[in-house]
Image (cartoon, rainbow over all chains, first blue to last red):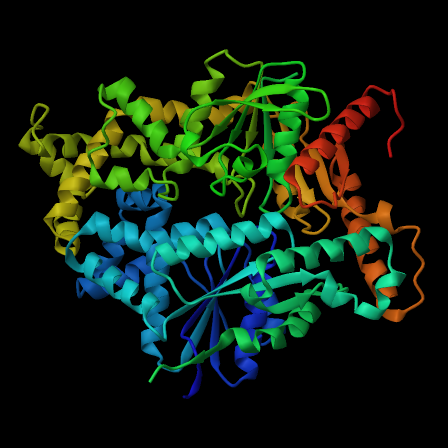
Length: 274
Length: 353
């Protein structure tokens, strides 16, 4: 048994569960364990500055650049690649069908991973509904294309995602009934879709912030919140999540990420099957 | 009182529950439809509606204490919307095209424009005094609105020739002249595009694709009308907007962004709702331990920062206190009370908190 890491990590979960900061902490943890890492995002806020401050290599993908590169490669002509991806009608079709653009991004990510065998990518998740659109688009477009280059490449993408060393999905939860039931729903859905390497973790845990011996020194509101959290843990069974990340009473994102990174040690670990 | 109340916010701020409680509050006096476009279908948990009831409005009753509040709730279902449209325009609810069937799925990608179509349908029905719309969470509050813009770009005048050409390829309409074809090939390059597309994807897809485009094109007027809904709502001032954020997840930048988008059109500025405020509960707490002091300061300061900026940026804002309960029912009851208090404050019957 050899201790390794996966090639691609995606932190997901419902809104407001701290996805982006967790993704960055995951990248920091991989770097600290000696891995070559790239943090990738494609929509939402650019994480450029935060990555720079934390020394995390960063790349922002651009849809039409990714598309141009891909088509050019497939049709053996850079010129055709730029002509097709520049075609206005083609652009407006891609524009109106978001699922399609996710495939193009995923295709680019796979290309980067294939180019460099030692690279691990952490993908900044789009907000949860979108993460499902993104992962589901793989299955959808296999049904749509049915044959040809696109079909074969998406098939390869599916194969990679489901392969042993491929993708790990980390689902972040916060200690509320709603978040946990949705986290579980998300996990089941991903399972049905064929994604099986999924780890859950608990974020913003107050019971981790306030140690037992200080519990009688906090106001009723906080005590109640902690007891609700503990109740949920009993209900859901703590085997659902091995990792609990405390609520950090800190103000800077950099600091929060550095404190969170060590918690990802067990979440990134992967044992190769022999 | 406006015909439409729109709740916007990124995920996890309690937007759906706030929208539901608002709908209940209004339903005491009026005929209310609550629409949720949220793919996570949170409201089904909160109002105990079954997943298989989605796609059309269902009567729901909620009874806090000895009261009984009646309203209608609609869980958006893009496929049902497309079927309805097909029935009206093409006299068959059967979606046979492979591509359209998949794109109309819950996460297929056409859900935003289909949501606009559905909303338009109910706005025109006059069965309700007020529609409360819980928009899907997005990176941007404006995601939902930009669905319309994208459709406009798709039906761009410049592509008229593309659609005409695609129509002609299946031979249902009069054939365009060969001179016309040459012109088309030169301008939009659609013919060339299809040849390359076939090389990339095979015949099946190109046939499905041409058929899907033709079907969408035959529904063009409907899609364009729906795409125009967001700007119609704004120019005709049809809606009250609520931007939801919480002290846990400071999304004021997003709220500010939407406020600016709306500002140009709306006469009444949107109201900012700051959810899950906690300082009421902890301001009287004076810990001595370093860790606890840090905790208190962090909880107080995050709220102070967000309130300070809210006051500066939003002429209208309201605070909602955090509710310590795992029961969705309890949340609705408490929020119902909160809306009542808000209302009393506005009418000057009560001093603000």
